[in-house]
Image 1 (cartoon, helix red, strand yellow):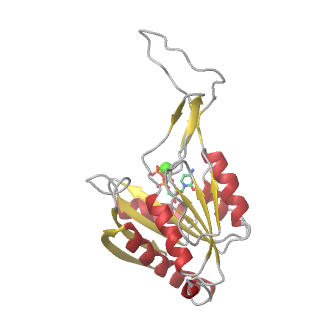
Image 2 (spheres, helix red, strand yellow):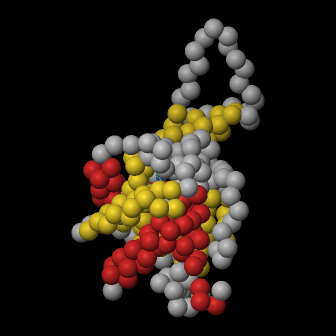
Length: 226
Ligand code: CTP
Ligand code: CA
């Protein structure tokens, strides 16, 4: 326990981690969600705490216990709630790691009463675009070191590098989803990209992968701030 304070790679740093899916309500009984389990983000929060950081974990709806050693957990449901919690926590943060699978769209209107079935007719649901949490942070004049995630089914490197640039990130961790790996599995594999480098983290359990990710984040953070 003592070894986790003061002498780790992230000692004295405030780290915010977002994890899990977001749920966007349609009516009082229905929502749009996604298949993120939160496991990778929770493992990243645990690894950051092990590295000595003061960790704030902003969690979407997941069924996971808070990792040992984190300072604070904030539970949210929608992308808008996640954005508010992340922006608030990031005012004091050195590093933000965005592992959450934020819903890109939400129902344009949330029905106050349960929608009733119209038998024999299609249902059309109008969706509104959600704010991009990472992009809103990088647009601020001062903001933490930003680490994004990119889950891709194809053209992983192209899409990941595109997001690194477009969202103004310092680093992005990309993984291929589908083919039995990614959201609900215990294992994962990541490729980390930054402006002038990249590194492959081969398939292993999410706890080991998170510790490797954190080691690279600490190194890049120190290079960027040196
Ligand atoms: N992200 C975010 N706010 C959003 C959507 C995504 O902060 N509204 C963050 C995610 O937490 C992740 C990164 O952006 O760290 C990339 O998310 P991803 O869904 O892969 O990127 P998008 O730009 O939404 O592109 P697409 O879903 O079309 O691949
Ligand atoms: Ca998206």
